[in-house]
Length: 380
Image (cartoon, rainbow, N blue to C red; front, side, top):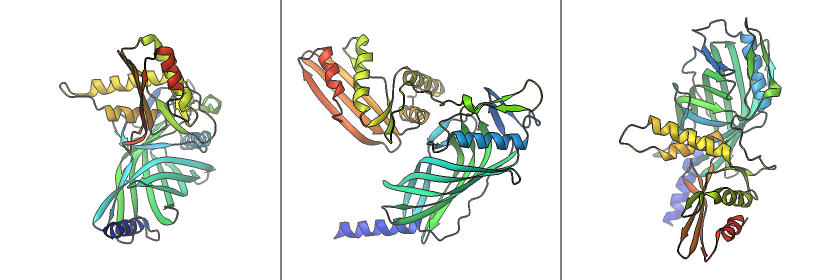
């Protein structure tokens, strides 16, 4: 009986937290001093007031949205100085006496339409989120406005449901002060407002939106004239493993760990495991992943104070963001006197939850038999 009461209270709190019909009051917290990066060169408007015209910036942003039509955009809270992600985007919701956290996972934008007279771009938006482990899918409309190069704003309003019938809604306003066409990133101060009967949700801070397809623009040698190179768009991470077709969830395969095993077997063993994972996942692996791992862990080590340990969780989250996913797979092959132990773990690095975990012995095996076991490790 007690469990039933608790479940009912949780459901009522959730409904009150996300009930639609209320007025949202998100605000633009800061606008100004735009930093614009094109072709690996970054400038701010205070350094170069004539570096871009309003019409040109609108055109480039429109092209960036077009090349990312339906692609997965990853939002995060970021550092306004370094323009790097600090952690997953989340919003606090107070439902009566019990607080909860909404995690915003992914965003998709489609049907971008440009209005040159109003100097704005409208689009449709879908969003994937979760509240206390309950998945939420929301949809709505958004608008990107270029009032002048130092006044670029984005706003969106979404309504959605959880558990198939519980409604919810939120408003977001982003005052953009950072646009990087090379890396496909928009950044700025974000204000989020949501709520309903007996509940209120809010969040604010510096936000970064990572687009998977980057937009490259070129300035001419003199003057503000530019040419937008839509054909030159490439994925910002350039993963070595080609994305598989369909709706498979993306996953990053970390470099396989070997203990007591000749390092020369790392490539064949990792390839065998990737072959098994590809039955279910869109797998990113190989040298591009290895390079990104070295880059991020080296950067974190340099930023860590002497005598303190590096934040491995933050590094893993940065790796996941770089490849537009939440799932990280780690594997280890350990050799002992009787054979081998093979272990595989897949985790959602942001929820800190286990998606898959398995450990199997391979008694009396040699390296070739271990490779065969890795091919069927996941049982997919």
